[in-house]
Every structure is written in C-alpha cells, then in structure tokens.
Figure (tube, rainbow, N blue to C red):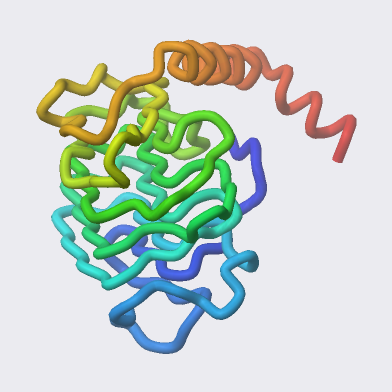
Length: 201
C-alpha cells in the first residue's frame, strides 16, 4: 500500500518508458539542471527500469535527492560529471531502494551538505520490500579528505569494491535506517498505518 504521496521528478524512466515532468522531449537533456529544482522531489528517477545507461554533465538536487532508483530497477547506470549544488542540504544525494539491484552511479560530488547520510541503500519503498543487492557507488568521488556516508537499510551490506575510495558505511545511520524500515513494515503489515491514514487524512 502507498504510505506517501506520489513523487514529482524532473526526468524519470518507468519500466524503460520515459516520463517528463520537467521538460519537453523523450530524450534527457545533456544536463539535468531545472530552473526551479525545488519543484521536484528527485531530479533523476528510475522505477522498474532495466539495463539502461545515462551520462550527464550535471545532475542538480531536488528536495529529496539528486537520483532515486526504485521498484526493482536493474542494472541502471547514471554518470554525472558533477552532482548536486554546493551548500544545499537535502535528504540524500542518492537513494537506491525497493529491491533495486546492480545499479551504479559515478561522478564528482561537489561541496555538499546532508542531514545524516549522503546515500541510502534499501530505504523504505511503497513499491517493493525486496532487499537491494550489488549496487555500485565506487564511481563517485568528492573533495580530498571527505567521505560520503552510506546508510544501509533493506539491502545487502556493500563490499569494499562496491563502495570505492570515497564512500563508507555509517553504522549509526544504518541502524537508524534499518529501525525505520522494519518499524514501518510492521505498521503497514498490521494495518495500523492504514488506520493512521484514515484518521489524519
């Protein structure tokens, strides 16, 4: 069941069919940098897509993240020469969730601030409770001396080769992510979440 409102994304691919909320045309522009990024939850979104590869000069930041992989996305690769907006704080840089596996991201992350971890693997998804597997963050780089914190929720623990040199798992944020995921799963399965929705809708 859906536990949140539908997302609005700048460029999204659902089941390999392109959807455009933010621009005209079936093909993505060279750079994903809308005039008003605050209108969008994610700038790039993959939902149930398979075997796709994209390369951009830049991917901007939406109110939730730059890129969101969801709903059993498989082998979707996104490279951006630069990610994000220096000094802008959003929920995450990258979200890989809903059983998405074999996806990869790469490029340089500009001076950037997050609340908590920069990247989440296995965040809660309304579309699938399957675990995420084999996603690669090793193509990401950032300023020397910095590390991109990763929160591991409903996901296999990433290997060193999947993390690369600039990403590291945060035990604290992973415990928070897992606690939130299993807590919400229990509420949804028990029917308590639907009751909450009826009372406060």
